Length: 332
Image (tube, rainbow, N blue to C red; front, top):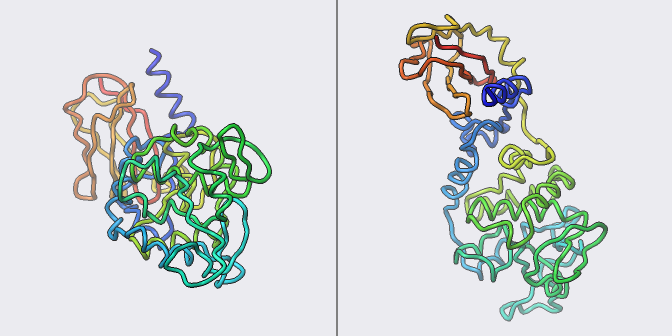
């Protein structure tokens, strides 16, 4: 009885009834025709990981970071300057620390937001998504300490580091990318709860440095940071305080304008007819929330086969290009 109650609670709260879709320029990259960006999609983490791993087509050497990192971290006010993480200092783009750099002074080096010494993957150390230009002394202050909560400007305390109010969201989205791309644990650098909080508290600035980084880095190595493209993806995957949603929300109201009909319901046979003027992906969930049936329906194939289902109460989730709606389905 408890599971049945929880099932209808999901219906009542609309957990299954809402989805977000990426903008047209990102639709192909995020495979929006095949992936459901909804809290009810238990496969979303794995599907996103498949995208960013598969699109990571160019593996840079660590030395090659100099060719791209400073364009990625370019100051929004001056393309010849670099904005440095944690401090917010702005320095000329030729002052990076290296024996191969003939310019002086050399005021900043490369911060691994997920510390280099803790990375399990050899290819991760040169992944531009987790690298930021940083004042040398501030980078040394942070070291490989885990992050902690705080307020105001950056500081270090008891071998923990607070990145500053203006940088905590950037840090959270980088750490979540590292977890998704390389399966590195949150616990080595803080906690998932902390990063979800920061992701919500410090949103992405439209056309700011995070967007610029995503553009430059995807051009250099092929993949994107999905949590910059939409911080709300973290909410869909892990929950927590709802973060900024940068994509379009499609709701049950949008969907129901199509006047989809489902009959008979309750059903005593092995088929349910679903009428719509659009193609539908139909999924059936049992009272435990387990997906027990998935079928694509078209104008030529309108019958959902439920022969394998036992008698009982189910959730019928219907998805079209306009969104998702759920209905109670009873098999007698």
